[in-house]
Image (cartoon, rainbow, N blue to C red; front, top):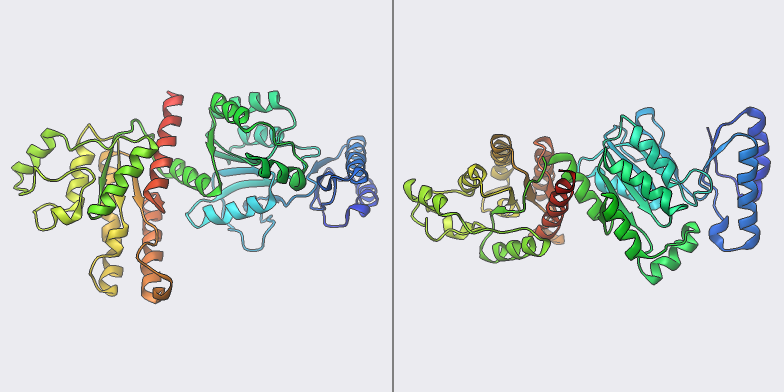
Length: 407
């Protein structure tokens, strides 16, 4: 396995030396081939391919970051996580690949292998997808694609992959400006986005708009059980945040159902004074001092058959009027309560936890500690956290649609 960082003019002499040594695989980090749009560079690229075929070599690239395989200590960045996971990725963009490893890594996601493959002169998206289908170390597949070499072959391979493992796809070059950029980036023909999107849907893949949404979906796939329906129960937040949470969920296609009558009767039996006032989402400003907590409401929703999934506004917990010491001390207990609900009822449980309320001039030590500890505790409990209700709801809805397609 050889990694080439020499200039494009030196690649052919280098390949001749590697052929003598019996090299089987060459990663061409080297760029300035067909992506430049120059005729001589494109001809040189084809000469590289011809030489590789004649000498039984395979090529990753050119114009790419190559392979990240943490299990054996191979990486294209010095600061990538050294521990492995179950997510495999193939990306035409090297910056996209390394950026996504960082984005997902901050949320507890780890990778089996990541291929950055650039111009796809030899090995292309179908080869990497084919590999991930059979790779026992990969459970979730992510793809960033600007253009494909063979539409029919890609569809057939993708369709086979989605029957075995979830596949999450970003299509680069959706609009005119993006399509022009893909040509100069990896010499790809973007093609019609509408056709590509229809193909992804028919193949059973999960289409996402960007790397942030890809991370949301991977987190949901990694931590959540199957989402069997779209009826959601929401707890936490005051009046305004509750309204916004409901609207975000409805916009994503989730059903924010009213509190069922028999659940209200149970609240009344338990002595809850506002049994006829509480709604979904649960407004903390209403239930305060009523004899029921947000955790109690989550238990009631978790136990009720009308709710398919649960969401928690954890931002409100971070903002409660406790001292920094009390918040840090109580954080594990708060998360432990949510973990109990998750384990007891087996329903998908999503936490909305961004950094609302912590403005730049207030990033002092104790607030950083609370934010960091909250994320750590949620990850340890296997509870996925999202930056907003919009992103949590979108991930839950896409996962519900994906799970429905498998049944």
